[in-house]
Amino acid sequence: MCGRTAVILGADRLRRACAYLDNQGRERHPEWKNADKYSPSYNKSPQSYSPVLLSLQHFEKDAESSERVLVAMRWGLVPAWFKESDPSKMQYKTSNCRSDTLMEKVSYKKPLEKGKRCVVLADGYYEWQQHNGQKQPYFIYFPQNEKKLFNKPAAEEEEEHSKGRRLLTMAGIFDCWEPLDGGEALYSYTIITVYASKVVSFIHQRMPAILDGDEAVRKWLDFGEVPTQEALKLIHSSENLAFHPVSTIVNNSRNNTPECIVPIQLDLKKDAKASASSKMMLNWLKNESPKKEYDDDGLPRWSSQFIKAETPKKTSTSLMYQWLKQEDGEPSAKQPRNQ
Image (cartoon, rainbow, N blue to C red; front, side):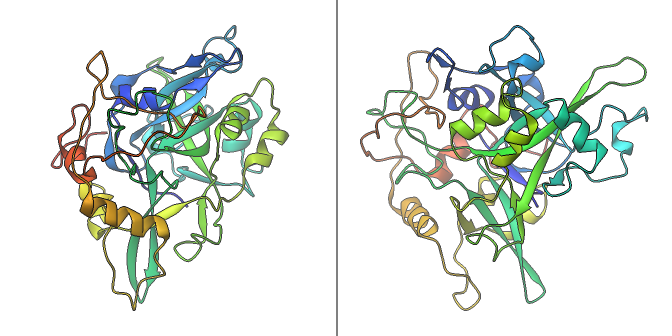
């Protein structure tokens, strides 16, 4: 399952991190539809608003099939047919939908058949391992380039499409619910889950369906060219993940601080074998010194996982804990939960 995520980039940096190539090979950045509804958080829970990628054709029928748009959607799908005046009266939990039953439940089957496929973006998600009656949280994410974990590119890495931090891309389904009184439409989503791969099954038996690579992202989003049954072949578990244990501070969704994602050391007698990425991240946090670099318009240079490019030179980078607490447009260490 997936019941908590971290999305810590500000709206514009998130848009820059989602650069992609359109059908003509031109570099594009998806535009926001409602950036005002999105706020970064180290600890997002269902009912909050998260960044979601989808095809622009859902809003503009004449748009090219490759064009993408960013939308802040509420986590927990409210189907279009829901008749109550208040969407919070939904009696069923719809933050996740199982891949093996999504074509059996009308809440998911109907929007899926209409091509309402989306990609839910996050830096990573949290999962809890049960051990001796206690729950140990882990943060799970794509493996990152060495010395680039949750970090901005340095001065030598000037190309925005250079390899850098990879946002986790999870397969989702969305729908649009319209109030009976004609008020503002509500866009909401659910994350598709599958049986966990071997790399994370010791933490939990299920995991989000991860779309690994831009080709998988493209096919999932392109509902006009890729039919439902072909798209569903992309839904499977992924071994390409890294993880590390984190503080139980994340257990309370009101805690929205950088400490939520910082690796911790566990008692070796209780801890599972640490991954190479976890060890590397711990060493990186201890040894790196801070460094910043900005582009011509005063915004930090960023990279995109959706465009392949030459590997940039390795340079010293900033401490994740320090810059996460001080960057503009992103949550401060004591920011209250307001999603």
